[in-house]
Picture 1: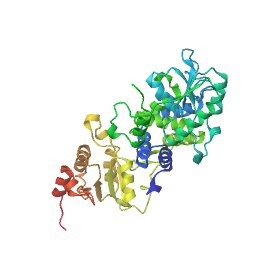
Picture 2 (picture 1 turned 45 degrees about the vertical axis):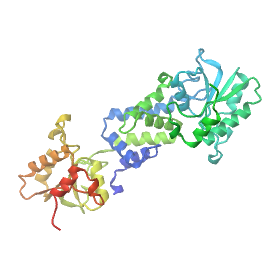
Picture 3 (picture 1 turned 90 degrees about the vertical axis):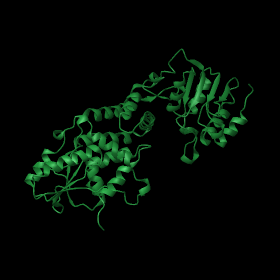
Picture 4 (picture 1 turned 135 degrees about the vertical axis):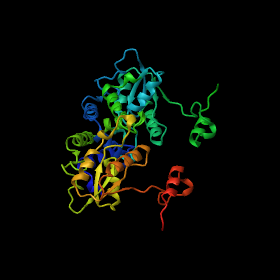
Length: 201
Length: 201
């Protein structure tokens, strides 16, 4: 009987259930875990949640999520300010940072073009990107949106907008067989891309 | 670079990562989801968390998690007050309630005996159970702890303590092949139990 469930438990289960990747069973497990957990553990989660809203903002230049007006990458004079890597979100930027091979700057779009969901160029940080291309001396623009249909469309869209900047080189991250990946297991799209973009060795 | 991660994000990922069943990837996904979510969604989760601590307590009689001094089951005069079903936790009680076939009362132990984890009889609601058996006119005590080693040991322990109550019938929920289950797929322990506890038809 769901109505047996005290309201505070039901509400907590519901709140967890709304989170991505949390099914009804997981939501219930999380709720009961926290109900039985020490006050301090709940306090910490609550504080972390509140802080994530109060202390975070978007970087004034690249629009990544940060706790400073200008993020750590944009404010680092050691980074190569002539390169901008365009990514969909902060998570993708962090994934690239973990590689420690890229030393340029970023620009976080905040999503990809998706007319079906009502996301056009104005919903993304595209205007601000063009402004950076105008004001900063950028030599290379690396388009690192995902290789989904929307990601490709967004990359193509930005590449077209960047065309007027004649000295700017616009590139797209490579797609192909993952390193260590087996040709046999690669999906058709990946395999045909790998063939199409073959390069001399 | 983990140090690129603003502290409020890192803290939120860490707080989620401490929850059961949430791995590092899920923790990151949850954190970024909430960072990007509307203020209201975070507020609701925070309130649900705070309420679960402030508004919940253990039922004075059966020790289930509830928002009243006496839980909905214990305070229901239509329930059969002569039967007590002993379960490990509130979740198990709710699972039984969902079946809508049991109309007696419950007693929530708050765990099972587990000497390895320092959980002895005093850490569980066993004394309070014996008190109920003394004070209330209980006719049947159903032991519904899980069929783990600890659950069995706890059931046996309680059954022994309940022996002096001569008019009390102590029973154990049935274990065997699940309905719709295939003999072929049943594990050895279940299959041998199913044979051992066969009953005339």
